[in-house]
Length: 216
Picture 1 (cartoon, helix red, strand yellow):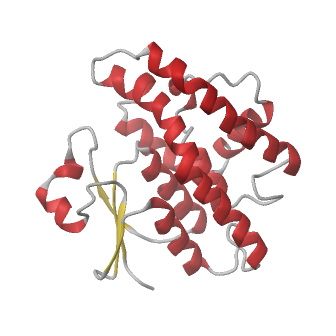
Picture 2 (cartoon, one colour):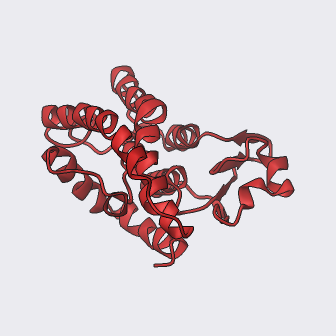
């Protein structure tokens, strides 16, 4: 099997999704732990590996560098073969891809505002900007409504009766939802789904690294 070197900080959204997905897919890897808040992603040694200066980053066989979290997940899913998390069926895969693109293009950006204001700012000695949060709320509620509708339609996971890599990717944006302080009362299906994700073995197994990175 190809070697896979992961460079990441477990507490970041995009690192968390990769850790959980690789655990779920049972993909072996070598971990190179970084500290985002310490600026490890801007170190010259890391920029030689990933000029984008983003985390996570994966290096396959010392020859292929993947700098996008969902690309790392899809690579691991391809290696795993035909699994419920990433079935061979073209329509099912297209649906999974749709939600991965949705997460990367709109969902992450909206959730990230709450992460920066309610999690990162206090950790760095600052305070949340109430005006920034207020301005983002309509957009976040719109997107949460899209997810709510989809989960109500399936009654289980995002793409149907089986958990897929789409669930792990989309869930990562709200993996600190208690600290992010979203207004969840109008989204019971999203609340139910988050609880289901938190009950997954791969999520529980990777929670410790997140807690450690955030200082408990």
